[in-house]
Length: 628
Image (cartoon, rainbow, N blue to C red; front, side, top):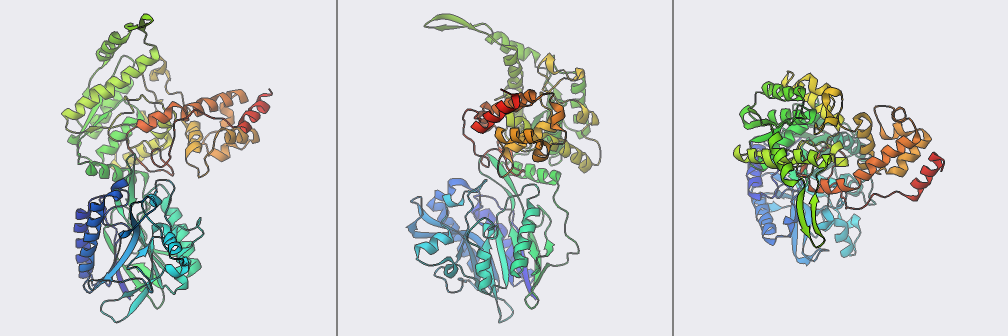
């Protein structure tokens, strides 16, 4: 039996020194467990999402220096870890010094090179270049390395012979880096190559960000690969939060063991476990986690959001938050979410009513604060808004054509309310409170730009901006369950969502947002999240075929919502024009968000500001349906 300790570290991106301190602790733990092998995840010293910090030679030298510290700490312990490898004599495709996303192994203060290899490490073969991943921007792949040396990938990619302390034996091991096991869409299959070289165990070092239900796909894919190749696998993932400037990604850990039959035989709990002991029986190929009688529960939406918000606040060294609460569901969920990770006195809830805000929502905002036991203040902003409007309306403007006067429309006055709330009140209060203020947007509103630029789209962090409206409600119920009581009042779940910026949005009259969320959530989702994204041509074709409901997964019958095809088309074009029009500019300027979905706005869905476009096929379909 071989004892293997895995350390799914909470990686701090760009902080080599702090990561090394945690690595040292795990080395000590492994020795206490009398482990023979200790495994760290991909890029465990530098972090994975660190942007163009890779362009700094000084940072690369620091990575190398701490690499040596791990080597020096490997007395009577085989250590496997991921780090950048640098070839100072060569350049990459960008003309800078060449870098590899690499895996290293060391024993008794010496590197263990792969078998019959020209390099003292193995290099990531498959470099992802989709979603948030941009590995080819920085790294040279094993495939490129093989081609440069006029060799095949089969002869270049080699397993390791790992010494086993306390014995004279070795273990032939195929060490892979994250994407090397997600090979279904690549022409190269690293695991098959290593299987053919008699690898008896796969170890995958990963930096795999969490998204909802991703772990289910990971299990299906890795189980199928292991079953096919009949080689067990140990999967070791990072924890923590890293970002690319616009999207903040959480890493769930969830290191796992797969037996030769593809069975998931052990897994660490999401977001929590720092280290675990796995047991490998080379005679039978059985791999399992020590002392685990059942698999941990899958992460919930609530637990993932809590981990993300807490990680973000730690990363910016902030522990006080101001939230504008309107009495609606979005701000209520944000308030409960932040309260679940912060002490009650570290959260200031602020209600900023005008004459358009009902007594109902004002009362619900106060009740929410009382339930959460947080400091609360109500600041009526009617006078502020009136001062702003008075200063701007009929403002004389001198030009070469003479003097003109600028007129404020009712729509402009709505936006002034939103801007005075955020840019004026919440921003000032957050400075006084020595904290930040939040953006309470959801993904539905962000998709169509249903939010005021520099107003309710302002804030330091948009925790819920990757959640559709139906997920906001789901999270609200999960938070009430987490607290064990109704901190979000039931009336907030049932009241019609409304911005309450005009008489046309009076909630007590049943008026509010222009969206039918039960349908538009799924319509807008089809524009973004499927691997092959839908556009109006697809939607109109499905509508004509009678298959629209099935294709977009709406929870209501879309056909019953629109009395005529003309009404359906008008609605489709209204939202498409907003989605692909000025809403893009709003999304670009919105705060960073917590990425939780299959595809989030920001660096995941890369957008350019263009005009809405309709294909020829769409225009023809439209003519056919409307009979023109």
